[in-house]
Length: 125
Image (cartoon, rainbow, N blue to C red):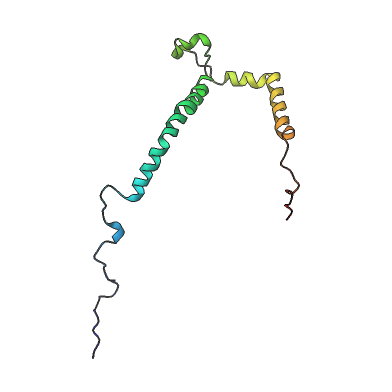
């Protein structure tokens, strides 16, 4: 008996006219997208609280450092004067501030003990 073979043109493979199974449209989007949305929904409370209570004050404090904002300006915070880098220049000319920076550097480098250099005690059997 003669074996029959399916003749296929060169350079083609079976199922070449069909899209792959992974390219089929799924209702409701792909699984990866749904997982990403679910992950962001779980992370949303943290992101919101972190943004309101950490990033907001951090950015506003940074911006206020370039103004002459005082406690009297709380009623009308947009009426403050812009001073630019003048406050930072005065800060780095202050010898008391420079001394405090040196004290902090000394504490960080010498005052905080380094991790122990000896091995952990071995357990006895």
